[in-house]
Amino acid sequence: MNSIAANLELIRSQVPASVRIVAVSKTKSPDDIMTAYNSGQRMFGENRVQELLGKVVNLPGDIQWHMLGHLQTNKVKQIIQFVSLIQSVDSVKLLQVINSESEKTGRTTGCLLQIHIASEETKYGFSFDEVRALLDSDMHKSFRNVRIRGLMGMATFTDNADQVRAEFRSLAQEFRDLKQKYFSDDPDFNELSMGMSGDYRIAIEEGSTMVRIGSLIFGDRNFKK
Ligand SMILES: *Cc1c(COP(=O)(O)O)cnc(C)c1O
Image (cartoon, rainbow, N blue to C red):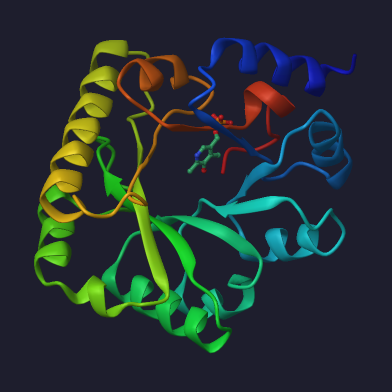
């Protein structure tokens, strides 16, 4: 068995069946993606618009593409018909544009609100206060062509497992609180995307429903992005 398939098999054996695995294929070739596809993988994550567009056209139509990276509003139009979930919604403006572009093409786009939980300054995302302000405003309810499916967050890049666990735990708590307060009658708000190659086990212990795994499946990327 080739190593990508073997890696996937190993990860699947360690992840509960209720947790979805997104194979993060950024920087990886269509051949690598096909290897994963042929071993049954259907959800793939990309973080750059051009790269996603280049891959979409050459790969099977039943792949579910997830956008994971910061998305500029002026690029939404290009990807809207190809993505099944945008995990990196980090502003009200972006949600608004996703809604209007979805409406134009007669679709409803699944979105996760990205929450900033890491101590690093550079990562995008809403704070807990900002996401509550958005949900309190009820503005999202007028967005008929987006479906808010849950939250996504990235822990601090650190060896300190206690810190990572505390960050995931606070996000999971926020997820439950928001679900109860704003989505109690909405069964679609059910995804908590947290956990990457280095921290997915902790994330699952803390309640993740979706892990985003790149290097552990495909090997190291040549450069970090
Ligand atoms: C690159 C990336 C991942 C995967 O990272 P690995 O450490 O290779 O598993 C997950 N989530 C996001 C948002 C990413 O940009």
